[in-house]
Image 1 (spheres, rainbow, N blue to C red):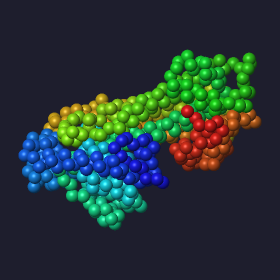
Image 2 (cartoon, one colour; image 1 turned 90 degrees about the vertical axis):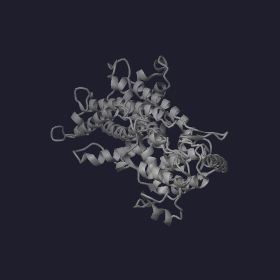
Image 3 (cartoon, rainbow, N blue to C red; image 1 turned 180 degrees about the vertical axis):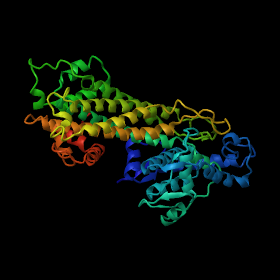
Length: 512
């Protein structure tokens, strides 16, 4: 894999995913190294003056009024890292920490933070060596950025704290750096603050969630199409001219997917025509494009915010091109926090609709001829009865996770930081919500696949048949009761790794 260049401009979504999730290495550009060196010269000049400059020759936060003498400034920078590395709770996932490290490196590369080139190069070296600092679940209020999580990263840069090495072993940072040939940093004026004063953790989680949700909404359309087909629903409501009466782009994309996925289905043709009495399907079938489409439009807004954040240089103070070093409020996480919370709402709603479609296939009063719970011998066998319970339990959790974190603020730092974003908390719950939606969609597809098999000898459409075939590599077809949990796990894996979407796209081409 080619190294991802980190320069003075923004990273792309794909760059973040490649480094965070797939272990791609990075390389600072010559332009970035030049910008970093120029900014550092301005900081060195300010540090040599008798006039206090925030973050360079003063304390931090509520202690910003104290002037720090030159002989204590290196200690000051290391102390802020040690004291702010106050996280607690479970370890944060490797991909999240790598995303956070990359995004902090990207901000350093803008030349707006005042660190030395060696500091940025050392952070890049950690990424390339596969060394991942241990970061904990709790500690960030999302303002001034993700202080505690980034402090645990900075702690590793000075050879302290614990890390995971490239093989995933937990080790003292100093040992892992030494083995990788990386010299721990001795921080100088401004650098401790520059390494931890950013919104990189919550932004990294936002980018990863957007990547996952783009794929999941395609999978949700597949589940909806299979459910419509399995329940002998009508596809007339997905017609282009009807959808154009309400011109939301996400709705148009979702409806187009449904039309393509249901094309040439013998099951759909079996009840098409004047004898069909299915004038109106239930909302969970008929309104799928409206709900899935609104989720897409929300996702598009979140992606716009993420793109702006990827083009940002978040630090306090910042070094401007004319040499001024100015305090600012750009570290406040509100722009990211809002969309993290916003996304959790459609995630819960898309899942809720999928669970309702699933339930219809299991109920003889609404499934149009399917056996109770899709069981082989109802009464002796329970079929997928409890799989729907699992879906419902997840949906209940997703509804709780849709409660926004960003409406809360707990003041800190002796009321200096008297309004905070709680964006990190919003990001953590969104990650759990994305995982939950994956499970709900997988169970719908698993249930719909069994229902389609039970419609034999009628055959599903080529696209949905390809999805059923792909699912059958890990989930057997209808039969007497089996241990269901492994089948759910297999279906979840096939949704998560994109196999089921790829199966549909092998027939109809890329889905929107």
